[in-house]
Image (cartoon, rainbow over all chains, first blue to last red; front, side, top):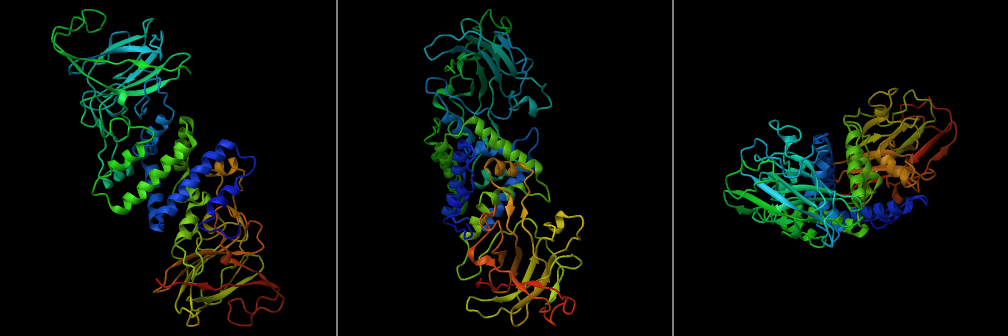
Length: 289
Length: 289
């Protein structure tokens, strides 16, 4: 095509793809480029704006490293990460929600009733529930990879005061499908906003906050892995999570439990908790693979 | 919005933008995100494909540096760079075409009739024409920033054998608006294909070739700057430029000039060219700013 025009360039792009192009690649890349071109035509994108876009990508590249994933963060704050989750959600199971950048592999075993709080001075949170199938039957042997912020709002990898696996644990449920552990109430926190993605948030008058949450990755043989988060209903950022992670069925309640009511057995902390504490009851439903 | 769904997430994104968001930013970012979400919904983008997309951006970041601009290259091979050019083209002037990554500032003056070929052993190309306004009047004092490949297909910045400004020159036209210089026929070349953008080209059965061309940036007070390229009509890649740069009005002809016909005066090489040579006549039309 020796006369490429603004009207035929999308067709020209498609015509360049050879017959050996894998059909799914042709579909995905074709749709992406069609939308990219439609976007440029729709807003009549200027050279100056194109330059700003390239400069944005180069700045995101510059700030990224092994720990900092600015392109993932961009996808998160534009809602793309959550949209991909939502597209593949199964209405018969617990909703999935963003993995986020703070999951780490190799978390230490957390026994039934084990404690993640360790020496942190914050009120005890008792979390428990059942891992079950869509019919309500417990899934014996399911594993829960659990992680959250410390009371200071930081994940272990962000905080020199914490050890690598602080507030990270891996629990295997028994025949009754039940999990149980003690921890502290996680706290709301901001996504990293000192880079180009933060500049976008500021320019749009958006805050960088996420509502507080407990992270779970739940896995069991024969079931689809579930990556999710659970949010308290009284969190100030529940209605404007900057990464669009909140789903109705992931909202839970903190129950205020009176002093002296902490279980007398079954928990690592049994016998040492006299004060009032918080309790969360949250069941997790997996769908067959 | 505590129940984000695949159907409402685009509206939720829009609702996050505050009232102080600049209207043009709201328009551009809103359209970009609407198309990004529509794309994901249209192809039912999977987590695996999302991961590949993030890995692609991180690989493009990794290979980029001061000299290598993989994000610009991505925009080029997807047709976005050319589309932005086309959106702002003025039908009364010469078409614009991609700047590319090989333009450098500060090119040395090239006198009327000056030579870019220097010691390179290749047939002489005589290029000349007029810089004019849409009514055909010459634009006195216009400047032409000219650059091209050496006979080996490399730009100076890619080639340790060439000096920095080899095949780069800046010519100012006189009252008659005419430019004239000698050089060599530029040769077709490939865009860099050893990175993630090259992987896309290969997966789509696309070649990385561009047709050969002479680059010009033409500037004159009171006129819109023109960034363009001129392509010979017999180039094998004219109908499939991998960066979509060819426009009908940018196709030129090499005239085969017989031995002994080289101008007797007006050129730095006058008197030293006895052989046959090539000639290009190409006028450049600027539109008022």
